[in-house]
Image 1 (cartoon, helix red, strand yellow):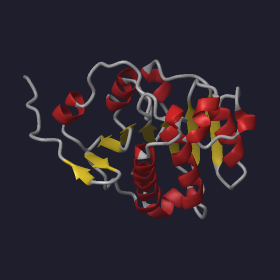
Image 2 (tube, rainbow, N blue to C red):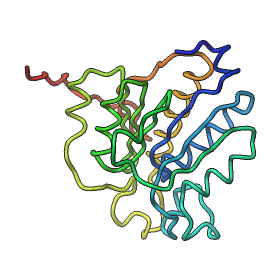
Image 3 (cartoon, rainbow, N blue to C red):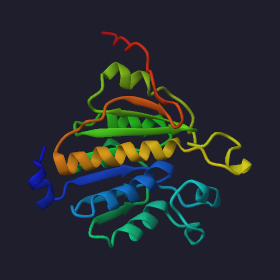
Image 4 (cartoon, one colour):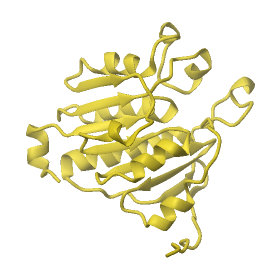
Amino acid sequence: MNSPASAQNTPQKVLLIGAGGIGSHLTDLLCRGLHGHGFDLTLMDGDVVEERNLAHQRFHPNDIGRAKADVLAQRHGSKGHTLTAITENLRLAEQLSGYDLIVVAVDRPEPRRLVHATDVPWIDLRSTGRGMLVLTHLDAPGRIASQTPDHAPASCQAEGVLEAGFVQVGFALAAAVGAQWVIDHLVHGRSPAKAMMMDAAYGGLSFGPLPEVKA
């Protein structure tokens, strides 16, 4: 791991997988929070901006139809940081090579598992409704595996919420935790965050007993 001083002189390469509710806010927080520290951020996402995204993601009406990664890279790349857009989804482990830190903020288990198998520091940010869940490379393998079952893609907004005219804010909690984790890594050379669950109104939630890992 680079020291804080070397991190300022040689920007580490950060990969953010997912540029939706969590990822778009995380990008904004990082570029603001690291305004005095240059860093190299790659945004990987194959999705384009849709009208329904505007309520809870950091996009504007004139972004509709454009690749999310392209929009964020162009918007924030002029603020003293290096931002690169990869307008494709994570499918293969080879797509993860060459990075110092990895942040995954997607709604599917397959790319999460690819990230979990890497040997570089990573954080996995998730949100459902008003709650959020965070895992990192520091967590027990049993915890990581038990929290990453097979499931269909799931939005950070419960069904019908956007149509009802309001937004659930768990994604904002996850983005804030992820931003602080990256900032602590780049500026202070440490990884403070571990597994946590939180509700936006009621605070921390318990995972329960740690699952046993079968031999």
